[in-house]
Figure 1 (cartoon, one colour):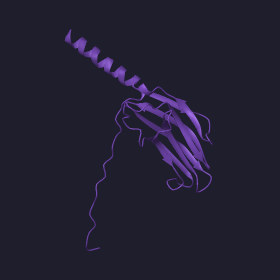
Figure 2 (tube, rainbow, N blue to C red; figure 1 turned 120 degrees about the vertical axis):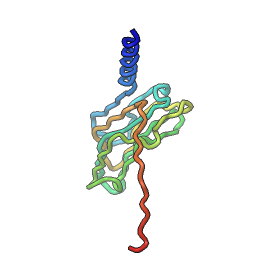
Figure 3 (cartoon, one colour; figure 1 turned 180 degrees about the vertical axis):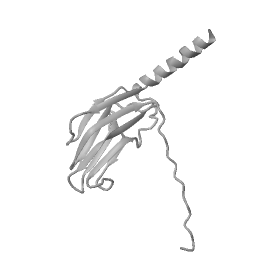
Figure 4 (cartoon, one colour; figure 1 turned 180 degrees about the horizontal axis):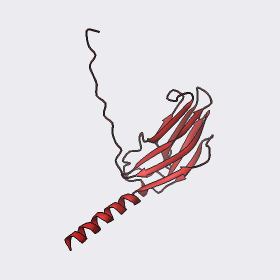
Length: 147
């Protein structure tokens, strides 16, 4: 009997993880600033919003910003790209989250929007997840004095 209860608890936990992630996709090419989605602030509490897609730049002064915004003009940056980080004018990004990690409850973010200039944003996919982001640690290696 205890095994059955344990098995049921494990299954319920796995189902909860499956429903803990929400995906938003924009299949169209985005070439001008626009609102991508409306969201409920309660759906973001303690979650992380990740962005994936491809930015193609038409000039060196281009930029792409994907933002979480509230009704008062305050923003959290999900991802930002410019020609400086692009290879041959194209930036492929996957599961990026700059300021949109573990969003606090006291911020009433209501929409996801894109600010764009001199660029095209393709294959935009946004994931709202309770999963903690994987943090890659870098190790500093001191330079040798005799070189």
